[in-house]
Image 1 (spheres, rainbow, N blue to C red):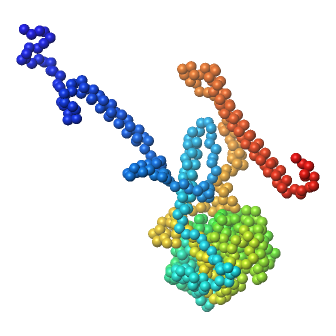
Image 2: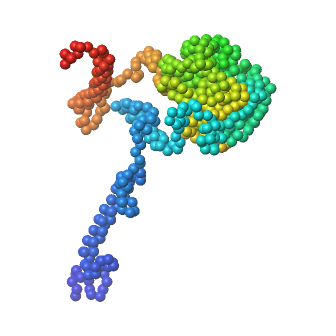
Image 3: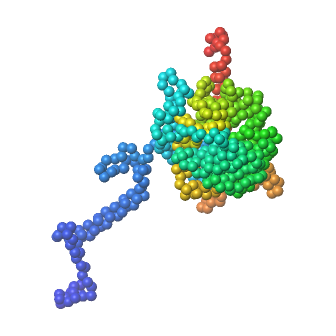
Length: 594
């Protein structure tokens, strides 16, 4: 009889025996069950470690350009990991603003916004500096042989020396029947419009020499000007102002603008500024066709006009030798400058808005710094200059009778001789440098001349702003975006940087009115009240410690500002002492000083 703890030898019981683990091909045969369980436990630990390592690797994963010393398939490491460094001077060139001071306490959202803004500014600054290295073209100037003046080199010699595409840009149009001619290039520099005094108008793609339209209005023409694109242009005729399209079809006749003599178009404001023989300065918004402002200058006939591309201020020259600066927001002149002893014949402003060049009846050519409104240089021309024009790279062209002279670096160094000179077939009536091309257009009594002036144009253009190679579809897209980003005429001011500043006088007045209405100052700094904390952390000692910590931080900030101001004043005093020592006259008793 079997014992109670054992089952009888041929009978099955309800308790199953523990099955033996099946053998695997990687396990050695003959191992017992304990060894198998041990191996299973070790394999589980290894799997867990591998999963942990892969998880850490995913967390530490970085983009390819930020990885340091990444291994390649060949087993080698990158000797120059990460993006290529950008020189600091190039980054400084595109610097937009100084770093802002962040608030210390609370205002976490404001701190986050300031940080995000600074990061975006630095990223765009680095990208602009990096892309600046990729600009394909470089500006070049005309250089003569040893002992040879560049002003003696003729246009035919230059055309023979350059390539075929550049030599085709030098040409003459003989239009002696309807001259003298006024001219204007489009913003992209691709298209040209000519207006003859006796009514002839021609619009053409001057690079391909393709004529777009040619009409005769049977009326005297005072000036022509392209509008925002090459599809429309304005013509100042004898009586009124007319708008034509590129096919020569009359679109508008604006009778409010009568006796117009000169015009300027402000591209970012879509404003056409005109001056008339009746002493009126008028602004026309070409996007809606309405007159924005009409200002009576009370200075007589106005036939000298130019614009400042930097701030859209209009400069007018008068017969009494003064130059006045105007904005559509004021009925009086912003600035009045006495520039010449005789009448002003021509005015031009460079694209940076820093320098203004004027010529007068006193046969003088003067260069002014617009920031200080003071003359920098003054040159005497034997016959005076009737027309002036400044290029994108700072070259100045001046017309004296039938001779066109080009000067270089007129505001930085004294100029003794011209950079280039050319004689045309009639008295010059209009000068204009072509944007993004080394070309000067000259309108005269016998037609039109296109001169080659090396180093005049900006070699690299912004394809999003003025693209000479854009298609009709791209022009339409650009026009829509430009209309959406149009600047209102109320924002035109002498200093455009003031638009981003706070009007503190108005703000303080409003704040005072608010304090009087509420009976307390809502912006005053509230006394620090510690929050109540649980678990014994708001004992009287802990609360006092927190109060002292906040007070110390405020005091530390005050002390830091005081020390910085003190160091600044000390440096200024040391610099003044050094200057006085340098410029003071030496004495024989100085040797006794220690």
